Length: 372
Image 1 (cartoon, rainbow, N blue to C red):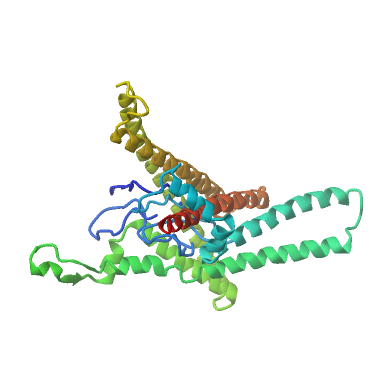
Image 2: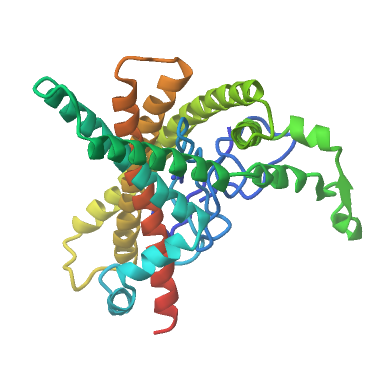
């Protein structure tokens, strides 16, 4: 199992949603995280750096995001409580953050997702109320029937739009795999080291980490399913592709939960080490004014680790909602199907949107701080 590295700057956020690995070795064994900078079925975001990964599924009506791990960037994070951060926060308004979000397909996807599942929950309550009214009134007014019909059509429209937003998402894992065909020639450290050996594509695919292959086949199956909805492919083929994609999404969600548990354990161990150092420092009877540079650094490090742990908990909650959602589709559970999927989808949408909002906000804060 490969090594997990947590840079000491940005807080944790995945997704839909920071990539922990910049490359993979074709001869290595199973690696924890996929390589590509974006998850299966999750659109790209323009504000996040390329080393940010959000491993998750896309906005399908039957499939939600799998994972959206924390953002871990190489740049230094703005220190909490500093004058520079306060000035940057005054310059960055909420409207600007939402604007930057909606400039990306991922941000629009989250907005459509919130509206879609918000309408679904409204229709659930409306149906329950209408059922109770029918016990007193034999018929429903025409305007009410028309409203329900329009809202159902709107939900279907948002679902189809989100499917189209994720077309050709398989290019991301494919690019990551093809980038490993040419690897540095490592047997010499002289001029020959600059030469490159091009491996066969099939060899690279076979030795790619399983999460990358899972992302590739899932995104391809999603496109087949979407093309069937567009009428380009037969309905039967599209249904089989959608079923296969559901299973891929279920496996990816389980892998994401395992990774999340490992990452939280690593963060917990690091927190324990920092707290131990701070406790040892406090036992030296040092006053607040005489804190050493190492102690101040540990305070910042502890704050950063606590943020990472917070967003990892958010990710775990989102993955749990995704697991509930996809389990109803994979195992074809009928009991309370609409209600459970509507609330699970809405919870996943809120959590993933919160992480994406924070991601864009931090990017804008950094840009504002550079201009101060």
